[in-house]
Image (cartoon, rainbow over all chains, first blue to last red; front, side, top):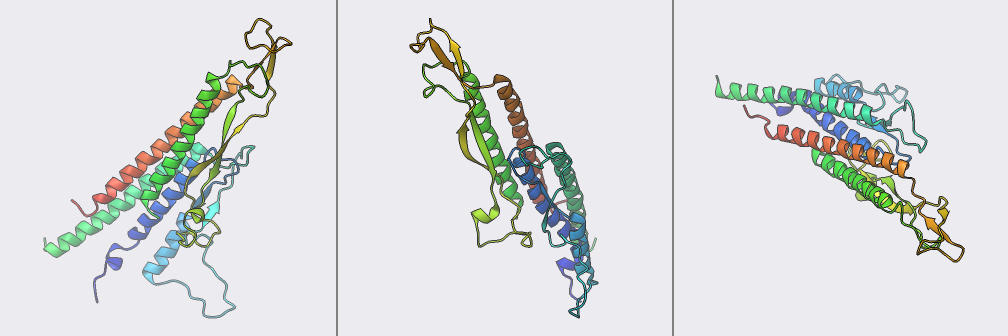
Length: 132
Length: 149
């Protein structure tokens, strides 16, 4: 039984990756806050995490028959989805700058949390290697 | 896909907003510039923004989100600057040195109130992009400390 980084780090590596992707999408929304006709987008973090969890634990569902239905939720592979606007502006832009900014900050905080988990995983490994 | 892209995206946003601020400054500075004909009169200038799609930058290399038709996007660009078609203000000032033979001068179609509102909006959007860049910077600095204790 080999020790691999994949097993040691678990879901946090995927979480950090997803946070970075989401930060990019939200930054793009904010940059286009004044672009006519721009539609705000986001990724479904929960669906992505569910997918990652299944792949990490190895308990994902398989489709062994063509009649089986695809049960994975849309957006599980990081597909971008359009936001439902509360009050779209007259030029067709659906970016709500304040909301996007708060989402971006929240995402950055969650990134820090995921980072902390990952960092402590590494310090745990270091301790194990040193035999402290 | 990386944190570095956020710098490009926020940078493009800042460039676009500062250009918008530039046109606003030009419009307000020229708000009282009279001229003797409709052709030579100053007209309010407005930038037109458009989103940059990642597919435009590198069509063969697809980032994440390949399931959707478009990539995550790569910021904003200024497609061009349009001159407003709104009617010029025609004023009867026979003593004006630039008055035409009927005694009229043409003032620009700049709406100063609108320009002020535009100015505030672009300055706020600029600040927002700076915030995004700062956050991306601190995220990047954190990742450099991974594994350190």
